[in-house]
Length: 272
Image (tube, rainbow, N blue to C red; front, side, top):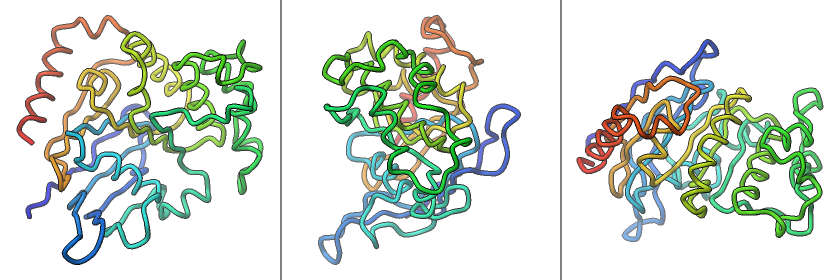
């Protein structure tokens, strides 16, 4: 099948340097022989430093699978092609704490306070010196939860728990933040608020973000680039540059140009 080649886009800002994440001719196959299923096919992709990238596509197209491949979370032999993060394999990048993964559900330890949950990566980390990390207290302040440090997850709202999860993910100062539908379980009002919260948190870090979403509005509001994936086998069929100025506020969502960009993304998704 023909493969879509995605040329590296220039990352935003003065921090743009060499590609941070690189996928070359990546195919992901589940099973063997007659039972083999091609989940993702022929992906070539470069992600720049401090870039915010969103990936969108129909359910089952391989968005989350591709994210897990970048994180090295798939069984051996499943991924064909090459994936590197800061020039390392996903396994080596994980050992170097080069990336962090934020799931749709916060997955917090219910018996640990918010601060203790954020502190957890420090208790198991290897290979990072203290000066490379923000303190857990600083991270809770960054996500707006300095006053909730002693609260248990059961005492926090859904949006607050997800902010704790994001703070925990940033504890080891990752270069890449992988986010799989992080706001999918939230109500629309909380989700809308979390958009600006995440952009504010991201602006205070040096990390790149790769976020999977089903929301066209969310993708256009958050991203510098949006990649569109086809139904299985998932291929990247379109790339949409989003050039609205930052910082972005909720007023942008009322702008005619914003709605035109959402319509452009919808058309690309339908073409896929």
